[in-house]
Amino acid sequence: MSFYEYVTRNADRIGFLTAQHVEVVLLSVVIAAVFGVGLGIGTERAPRLRRALLTITGTLLTIPSFALFGLLIPVLGLGLAPTVVALTGYAVFPILRNTVTGLETVDPAVVDAARGMGLGPGQLLRLVRLPLAWPVILNGIRVATIMVVAIAAIGAAVSGPGLGELIFRGLSRLGGANALNEALSGVVGVALVALALDLLFVLIGWLTTPRGLHA
Amino acid sequence: MPDMSPSPDVMIRLEGVAKRYPGQPADAMAPLSMDIRQGELVVLVGPSGCGKTTTLRMINRLVEPSAGRVWIAGRDVTHADPDQLRRTIGYVIQQIGLLPHMTVAQNVELVPRLLGWDRARIAGRVDELLDLVGLDPAAFRNRYPKELSGGQQQRVGVARALAADPPVMLMDEPFGAIDPITRERLQDEFLKLQDQIRKTIVFVTHDIGEALKLGDRIGIFGEGSRLAQFATPLEILTNPADDYVRAFVGAGAGIRRLSLLRIADVHGGMTGDVADQEPVRVPGDTTVYSALEQMLQKGTDRVVIDSNGDLAERSLSLRELLLAAAEGARR
Image (cartoon, rainbow over all chains, first blue to last red; front, side, top):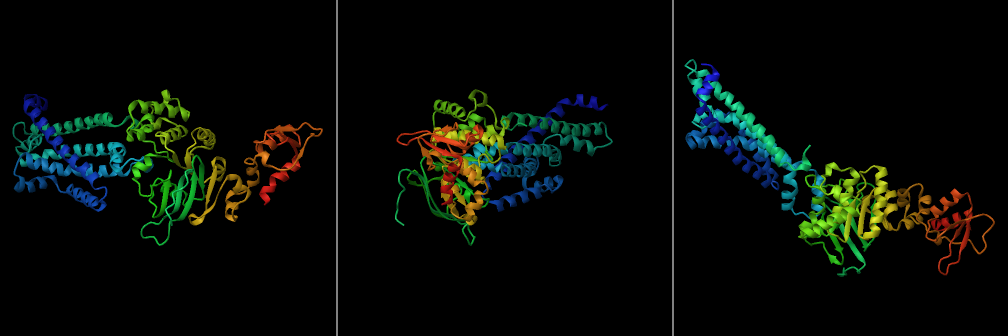
């Protein structure tokens, strides 16, 4: 059976797993964005805590994903929970990093002028610094998303949802009927999901960046 | 020191304000006292690091004084809420600092919005201000800062500072980053604008030429944030307080002075009949500089100052004019 034939015959299952994959990625990234942006803003007056958090979340990224999923089994069991926890953990760093960078690189002259006009710290953040840091923060969320799309495939090792199931099953019975096609459909699916979400972020970026900041 | 609030015509009083940063052995800014009158344009000038910007920023408390008191409009604001205080003080900086994600109108209306003005009043005010600084509201209202030239951006910066009609404006080298030709034009417009609005303005620059051109009074800062002289431009050129001021004002002080000296204030000359030659005739508020210019153009060595009130018409020769004009300067 050709790859094309395989995909058309199994379209329902592949479609279902693709949707699952997208869901688990977006769920994890949304949670990570809340933590990443929140911690980035919350630690403005606590530079040491901020550095510590960046180090911790950065170090987390160096743990091989296969190992992390495995280590979470005793704590969270199998399925959705360990997958989302691990993916969220990986996604926090790029978002936190870019939130910090975004806020720190807002033009000091703009901040000085805004303070001089009588904006308090809260207004300064809401009306000036966050809107100006937004393109950088959004880029962090985008990088986190693309990264997590690939890592989510490994989640199948702990019976997590998504396209990883096709890859793992296909590879485990390599040599069997359609095994290669199955694994390949998972790999191609992951790549297409990454591409689609990347395009989605281009659109979101264009829609949410204030017009005055467009290049 | 007794608690003496300043007299009503003093808009800003600095009373021994000083700045020392924590952990530093000496003051970054030595104690300074200064009275700035209502409607006065005071220019603070000096080399970089002399404390002129720090002084400016202590008025709206972007730098908190570590000693002394600041009075604005008869009120001790040393411990007032800084955000509330700043909404009543216009602030213009060299880098302009327009909010790039907001339109020209949104930038200008920011402070009135913080102050809770109603929509109709804000919209009217934006157009009025853009007109005032020479920008067509219809063309500029909805533009973004990056779509404007440097000169246009600084006009918006001035309009924004004036938005809530603050009695006091602080300007930190507002024309410093603008090309010389545009700067000259903005200075002229700014003087005209100040004639209309009569704000109390503290203006920082490092350019003595700009200071002499704009200031009603000039504060010249020396090393170690010492206020070397605080006087009118004419007084500074005529009687520099010390060698530092003399050196700072630099070459050409004699010529510069002539453009500040009213010809009516020059003594001497004869009343009555004017000699053979066709003289230049000028009103008493003409500057000596401009009178000399007219004499040069006409190729005459005599000037007649129009009679004014009980002052009779006078006539001076070129030599008499120069000697009399130099009189004050040599004192």
